[in-house]
Amino acid sequence: MPAAAHAAASSGARRPDSRRRAPYPVRRKVCRFCAEKVRDIDFKQIQVLRTFTTDTGKILSARITGNCASHQRQLTRCIKRARNLALLPYVTR
View 1 (cartoon, rainbow, N blue to C red):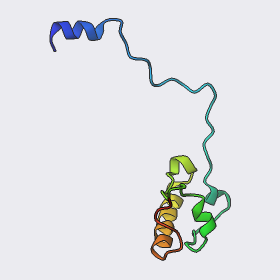
View 2 (cartoon, rainbow, N blue to C red; view 1 turned 30 degrees about the vertical axis):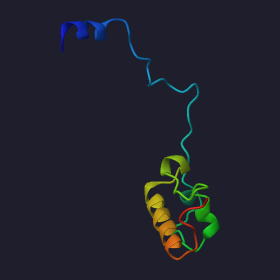
View 3 (cartoon, rainbow, N blue to C red; view 1 turned 30 degrees about the horizontal axis):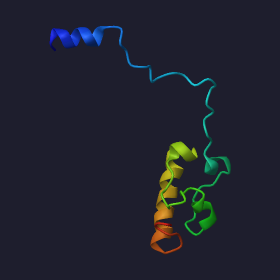
View 4 (cartoon, helix red, strand yellow; view 1 turned 90 degrees about the horizontal axis):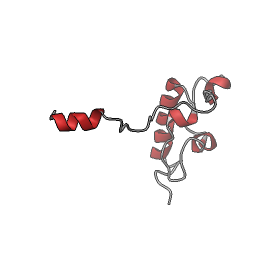
């Protein structure tokens, strides 16, 4: 690294800290299916599956919904199966 660039980088010009803490602790979302003790998700329960898709038809991530990994995999599989059988739309406009 050239000396001039190194001096500019190490001077007091710092980027704002992007890892600031939240003003209050964020509560971890609980998996809806674990709370209700559901073992298997059914692809025919369209109203349940619709709550885990966006208005445009995309599947919501586990980070947003709070699902555990195993139920998120089941949910994704069921949504795709319901789409294939034309129970759910692939895309809504």
